Image 1 (cartoon, helix red, strand yellow):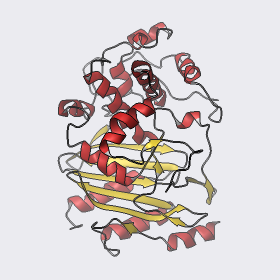
Image 2: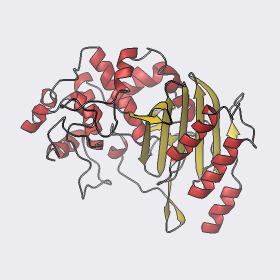
Image 3: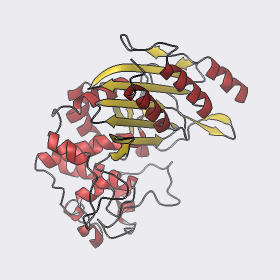
Image 4: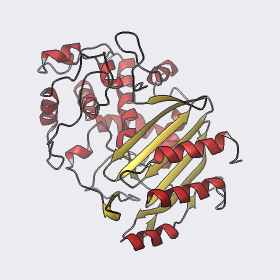
Length: 357
C-alpha cells in the first residue's frame, strides 16, 4: 500500500472553479502539493475568499483512493468540530428570538439533571466553561443511542470544575446544546439548521451525516496505520448526528457561509461580534482557550483571526477568518491526523503578502 500511495500522490489532480485564480505552477499549488505529500494526505479541498467572494476553490488529490476519484470543489467532506459554529449560531438565533437566554440555567431545559446543572448556563455551554467533560472512557462509539440515553450519560458525569471558573473543550457540551435546541423548538437540531441556515443561504449540500443515504460527491475518510493507508474507523449512525460536529459540507457551501458572516442575514452584527469575542470567566478574566462561541480567537502576526478545526472519522478540517483583512481560508482533508491548520496558515500568509496576485 505504501508504494501505491506514493504513486497516487504523484498523480495528484487539481480542479479549479471557473474564474478562480489557479495557475498550476503558482506558489500555492506548489506548497499544497508538497504539504500533502509530506503529511500523506490523499485528498484536499481549498477555499480562499476575499470579502465574502471566492477567489480560489480548488481540489487536490483523491476523494476516493479505491475508485481513483479526484477531489473537486463539489466534493463533500465531514465537518468535525467546524460544525459547532452552526450549532452555536442556531442557539444564538433562538436567543435573539427570546426563546433562550444566555444566562438560563440548564435545569430550565433539563429538569431531571443533577442539581449542579442549576449553576451551568447556556453561555457557559457555548464557550466550554461549563465544567462539562468529553466522552467517558469506555464509551461505545459503535452503539446506537436514543437522545434520551445520550443526555442521561451526560447527566451522569460529574462536572470537572465549578461552572465559569475554567475553560475545557467539551464535545458533550455541544451535544447537549443540540438536544436543548430540540427541546426548545420541537424539532431535531439538524432540521432546524437545514430550515433556518442551510436552505436560506443556498448551502445545498450541507446536511447531517448519513452513511446510509446516497450522497453525490461524498469523499472517503482515511487513516494511516503503521504507514499504510486504511479506511476510516466506523461509528454508529447516532453518533454521526450529534451537535458537536456531524455535518457534510463542501468548500462551495462554506463560501456561502463565509459570505453570510459579512451580513446580518442570520443574526445581528453585535451577536456575531459576541461569538467572536473571548468569553470571560466569573472572575472577569478571558478564558484560557481564547474561545468565544464555537470560534477560537487568535492574533497571528498582528492579524485578528477567528478560526476552528474539526476532526472526525478520517477527516480533519479548518476554517480561518482573518477578520480585519476580510480574508478566509478553508482547508478540508480526508486523513485522520492531518494538519490543515498548518496549510491554512501558510496559504493565508501568501495572500496577505500579496504574492498570490
